[in-house]
Length: 110
Image 1 (cartoon, rainbow, N blue to C red):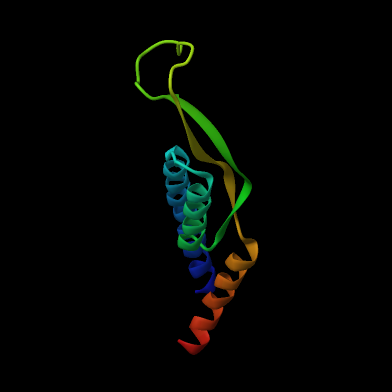
Image 2: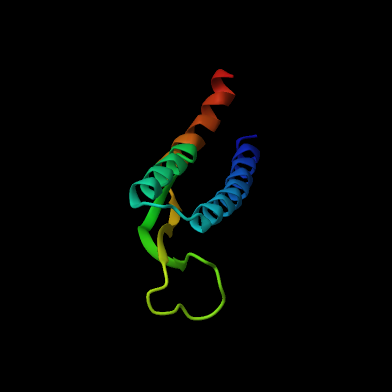
């Protein structure tokens, strides 16, 4: 019985990892007007997914043209600076182990 619960737990973790990666991809595609906004959104994202943490977290500057015309920007053309979140995630092993331990207890106390 415990082996089956552990196998189910592993499958759930794999599915959640995929869901989290997609969510991270969407987060990385967002542009922010200032660096504090990007940091705040990253903190909100971590609160939403507490079993994960950022690995190689950084905020990059992105410069884009304001008038959105094709081609190389002319001298003196207005450019807007945006910020984007970059980095990877990793799973917190200790949180996963705690969740695995709970599986065994549910059988005894449940």
